[in-house]
Image (cartoon, rainbow, N blue to C red; front, side, top):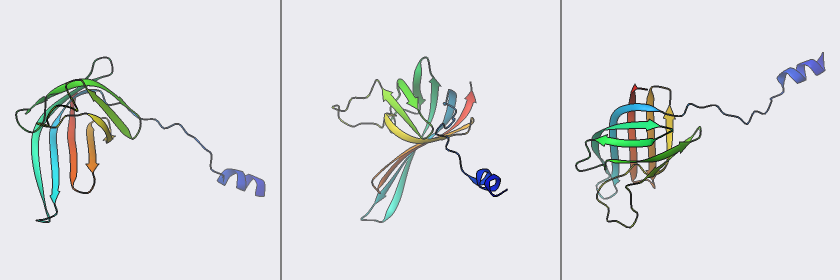
Length: 135
């Protein structure tokens, strides 16, 4: 009986984590949240964006891309915790003018809501809050 109880309470190791790769069309907001240490205040800039994602064709950002965020496209890959965007329009050597969806981000996805974010130090957070519109 004791062996049965010990076996029943023992944890099993399962290294596989299931996740749903985000695909489809999304709309929402891009937020740039910046903390200024001299004023000790946060300032937030926003832009309404659309994101199209498909494994076969990659991603494309459109919407309000006039001042804050660039319209762009490229490929992406994800695991259960991180998503990486390879923006084909981004150049690390070009002068900074707008934010691009490029690099490795944390993300959450429940099949409908897609949150993508990255934090730089303790002063800058880039966050995308999307809702799925179609497959």
